[in-house]
Image 1 (cartoon, helix red, strand yellow):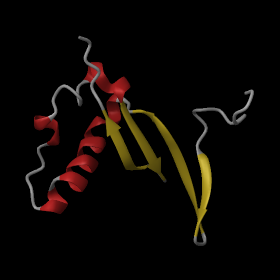
Image 2 (cartoon, helix red, strand yellow):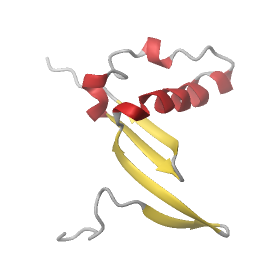
Image 3 (cartoon, rainbow, N blue to C red):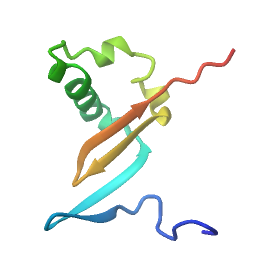
Image 4 (cartoon, helix red, strand yellow):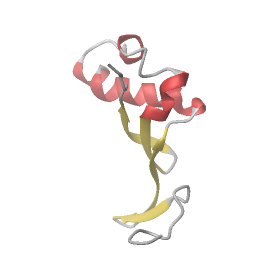
Length: 92
């Protein structure tokens, strides 16, 4: 790729953390099979660790639905979701 990495967008990156090699994927679109683990992660970070009920899926149903998954990004390390960003585009 001109001016960019020749690494495929789908190919995970390897990174060294301490003495461990970490397999990093993303950021990329959340798949249908990852919506549950993504909501678990979002609820953990933004709800339960703050003493709140795990209601992200109920609070943001338009973001975490199948037809909007192209707007939900995830990053995985060693197969676990470690970061997620979701947004909803609204046309006026």
